[in-house]
Length: 119
Image (cartoon, rainbow, N blue to C red; front, top):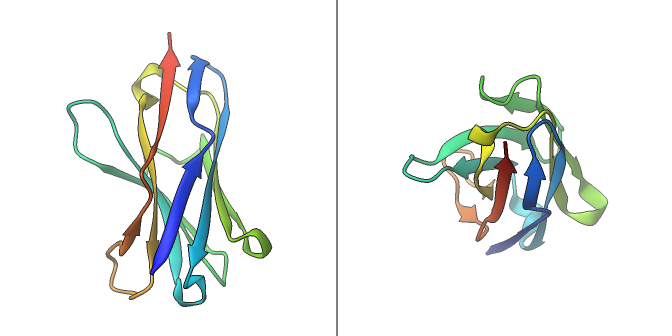
């Protein structure tokens, strides 16, 4: 089992920045990749970005390219999502997820952290 705890959400003005953190614990040695997804009110959950835990290679959804950056600190078992130039449409609950089966699905989820962007 892997436990994930997100932090860093909050309220920010449009154009501002936030950095989200996701601390992983438990059987992290089996984790292949970690990612960030979000769910806005009334919308489906949306993939944003992922990072290979060992190799550090990253992937981004088109909606995240250019404004969001995913990174990780293996020593701290923590993944980050740096968000810049935030817009009101970025308002959502942001979830951290982990994949330890390499099957393109997410096996573990955090509870989410709310980001509210005020215009």
